[in-house]
Structures are given as C-alpha cells and as structure tokens.
Length: 152
Image (cartoon, rainbow, N blue to C red; front, side, top):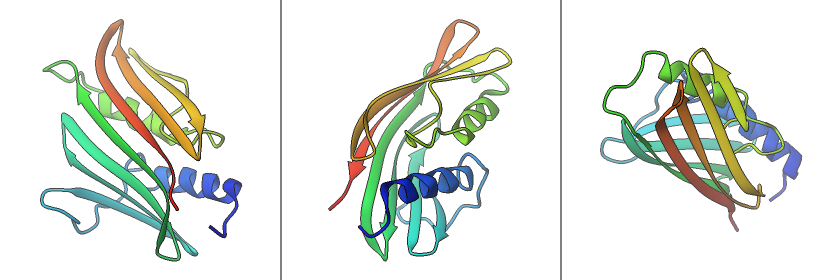
C-alpha cells in the first residue's frame, strides 16, 4: 500500500460521509438485489455494498490503484417490528461523525432526541471488531456487528 495510514483514515471518513451516511447516490448493483455506493478520490476507491433492509449484511472495501487494501464486513438488524420515526436520521447522523482515529462506524456515543447510538470496538485499522446499538428511550431497537482490517 502506497498511501499512509493517516491518508487511508482521512479517505474513509470522507467516503463514509459521501455515501450511505450522506445519502449518496446508489451505483449499479454488483449482485442481485444489492445496494452499492461508490466514492473515489485520486488512486483510492471505496465501495459499500449491502443486501436487505430491516435485517441486512454488507461489506465496505477500499482499493488503491484497483488493488484491495482494506475491508469491513457487517450484519445488522432491527430488534423491534415498528421502526420509530427518526431512526434513520439518528443512524446517518451518527455515521457522519465517524472518528478519524477509528473510522469503522460512528462515535462511541451519539444522542439525537429520544435516540442513543453507541458503538464499541477493539483493535485498530489493521484488525478490528465491534458492535453498534441504537436505543429509543431505554429500549434497544437496533444492533450491528462489524469486523475487518487491512488486506494484502
């Protein structure tokens, strides 16, 4: 990999803010029924592709000069049948403030009206695992698990 770790982190933050969290435009599906979002800058290209809606699975990948250098897999699901109004806004708002030092999902804690977003992780950009949750008042309504790291 030619770009520095800091440059990769900065790119990931921009990519995430300009794709799902930022209501980016969907790209052509790479698989049946997938939703794909792309972001590119210089030699770096980011692809987020996922399947499903209330229960979903996906993958984010970064390519440098068309070679995969970093990736993350995730699986999330709603824990309640009726999604409270404002949920999507809370999730996307939390994802827009992804921390530069740990550019996996959102910050450790984010609050928006009756919603509380929490993200827990261990590891670093090279090798990490984590979970995120959203609570509506005190009720857990959403959970996502993620893992990933550098690719050689």
